[in-house]
Image 1 (cartoon, helix red, strand yellow):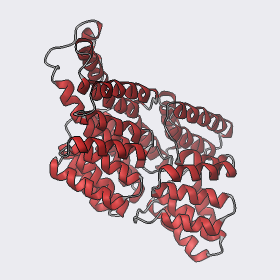
Image 2 (cartoon, helix red, strand yellow; image 1 turned 60 degrees about the vertical axis):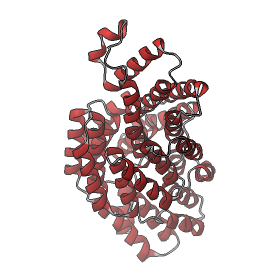
Image 3 (cartoon, one colour; image 1 turned 90 degrees about the vertical axis):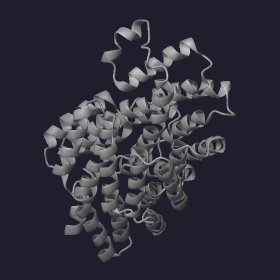
Image 4 (cartoon, helix red, strand yellow; image 1 turned 45 degrees about the horizontal axis):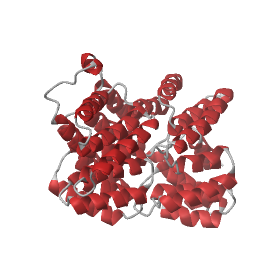
Length: 434
């Protein structure tokens, strides 16, 4: 859910669910031969696939309330619905379903631990996600789904080599879209953008469901936007994704970002307004606010910044830990002191390169640039060529008097993506002129 052209959390949640949902639908599919009865049956054809899966699972549980695997599958589907809709209240439903599943069985219930790991990863509680994945693998060491969950948690906890081993094991057990997308992410973090694109194209070829196709299109578009400054190609990917998944809020927000990168600001603002109205996630609210401010609509931008705090409280109430977003929000728009407090807390639960960058920026706005530079270097530990990270390090280096290195970082940020941030890209250009 990073607000500045990074795909870490959305990819994490999606990748967990793409793999786990296959197992979930397999479990629910055992009763799909007989359509549900009652009021849901007549409208079933009009429902989206996730809502339909939930209806089928709920009908099954009405008939078999002690079916612990269907409870676990239902939990996984709720997580995917939270990701697709942006509504964090679905996480509470997922937790309730997995609790019911585990109350019935924990000795054989590897699916429940896959669900629990997905929930905790979505909430950014990565130590808990890791523990759940390992408990599930102790039950079923041949589960590619659980190896995917293990890889996701290890990645976000900064254990990159171990995460790659888990992805290799996953590919060995069950090559397919979930494994290919994780491999693409690992390659991107290494800085192998060409390899990441190849893996995502393989995932797109293998994709069957609209969700899988939309997911691959989303991140193929992100690669075009973030590492080739090709907003036109990115927009084509996003439009292709929306053709099969028109309600996917991740794609809709990505499309708004591509429109802004192409200079079609009025269209981008209309698109962001629709996204935020339907799915006011903090990331999108902040992107919208900063684009409004860049367009000279400061009063509207201020309203969106106020909305950010409301949404932040909503996510926190649903146990979702927002680490990077509030840290950068406070650093750029709020309290430097609070930004640093959030950075310390965020690093404790998520020692990942993106969090290291946010920590560096929080230190910078507090005037602690020597420390900030050390944390900024951590953000490049894997070789990830992130435009925002280059911008932050460039500004920190300029503050320390290292003009040549600072400007080199700013040029690299703009080379990767000239529209990496409506707020900071213009400031990067100003700093280079100065």
